[in-house]
Length: 248
Ligand code: ATP
Image 1: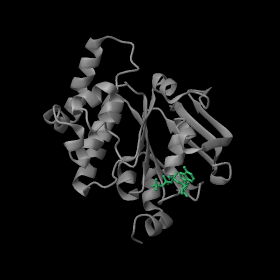
Image 2: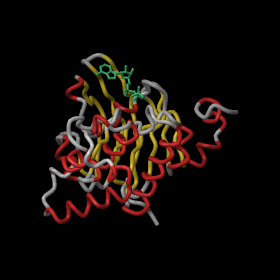
Image 3: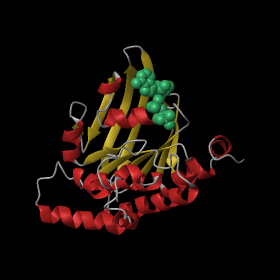
């Protein structure tokens, strides 16, 4: 059986402020039903790659100057982030970005704004989100700004789910969280992938955890993909072990 490719990034270059070349020809594929990890150290270009895909570079004075980005075969480079959400692609930004003054439930509901289906379907999905994230149900009346970092990360993922995405671009979900919470969140990502069929492109500095949960990985260094392969193979690769897994 051949798996369908949802997202295809082909040889993109990104330049900031007209002069700073940050992505130097990045190519990657996200297959339907997979968890694909985009790995690499600080400043390797992971966030830039996700923002290029969801067309969020403009406000940072960044620009895709070469290459193409396709979703289900269609060029998506000129779409707005909202257009992309309507096509089923949504980004969860690094740093969690919940609306601090709204409650958890109000935050989740803001995720449904692009939907055209009825309120019944939206309440059913709210219930679905609470089933995956019982902590969010407990905290649903709390102002997001007063919840923990882990709860805010869950809120950001939950809000993305409310748009009924086919693909989630998830930026650094482990950032600033205790190991046990990282495990909990990755476990939920895996469940969402297996049970709801959501595909993920996951940017992570935490190679160890990402390669345990992902199916396939790409390693970025200074704006180039230097290695790629099935997660199980990358985990056993001596260079990956030495440079990214902190053991040899
Ligand atoms: P991190 O884990 O820190 O987010 P990353 O792999 O996601 O790292 P990027 O944030 O994509 O890396 O940054 C890649 C490079 O682009 C870095 O050298 C960074 O300094 C540079 N960069 C990022 N944003 C801008 C910007 N708005 N203007 C100029 N340079 C930028």
